[in-house]
Length: 401
Image (tube, rainbow, N blue to C red; front, side, top):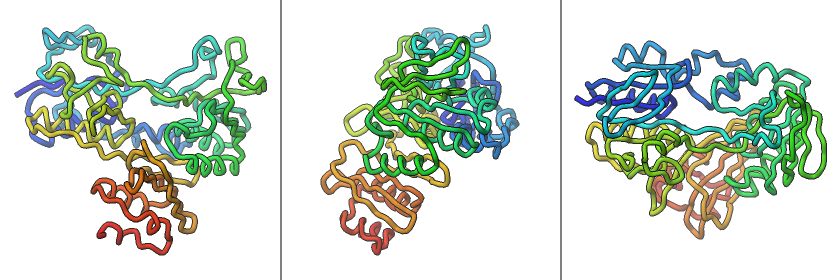
């Protein structure tokens, strides 16, 4: 029997400990999280939870009783301050906890505005944890004016929820267009029109110069000299992998905690999974920020702790909910050179190709394009772009070609 200590209590950690027990692991399992609640879903925080449509307990990935019933010691409100690789212990709550295998599921942390431009003022929020959203909720009342900084998926989702709640929303994106880092211009344009039609004041190519206020934010000066009156600010400018513990104990860092194909770090008794981990794929090092990756990596590491010797093959998928639109993304679009647009009524999908090779699909209220595209990509199949663009084509037939 081996003792497993898991640091971090998010999606990857919850998937990992459940997998260990379901596969028959008999050793001690300790799950340590800094937050006062058991592992929970993060995507609904800024959507249904903030809108009041989802209660706290429904956020939990497993009922709290699950952990005790399965012999998993869940330590909430606890912080690991260090890892002693020589003694194979982690220090948390003033206690040294021994491990045979330690797994880092530390996730990621949101980028914040620097204090020099007013990021330390009250009323400036990020959206990552339950505490972040509970802290922000009192500001999200009808009629208030909110500035959303950042036009990625985090910022756009925040703008959509605030609009639904009856707030006046201004969104600024310093890049030339929203979603510039992650999506094609066609997808950016589609979501720009969606938000503007809902009344969002969306400003691209305009950065934030500074926030205005004494102790609490009352306004914002943009890079073009415009001054806005605001009641609060939501910052959605990305996340960074949480690597502090790994760095402190001397593990290799490369765009996150570097792991091999089986999830082991540079110390073979320490593993990593989820947002914090970068792994080898197709001759390069990759890090994915998604629920799917957290689940898959968590389960992979659990299997390999038990001796499976299985390599990780990522099957990237993502989603975003904005207003009444569900965006589903399959694959990775890096290196694309053309977009094939498929429309069928209100459903629309953008298929990314590099030459004749299908790379990815952005599907807006088009679950069929998403499901078929995902299966094609995973199978290494690339359908004729002309057939994809033709709304008369039966997409499922492409799977048999």
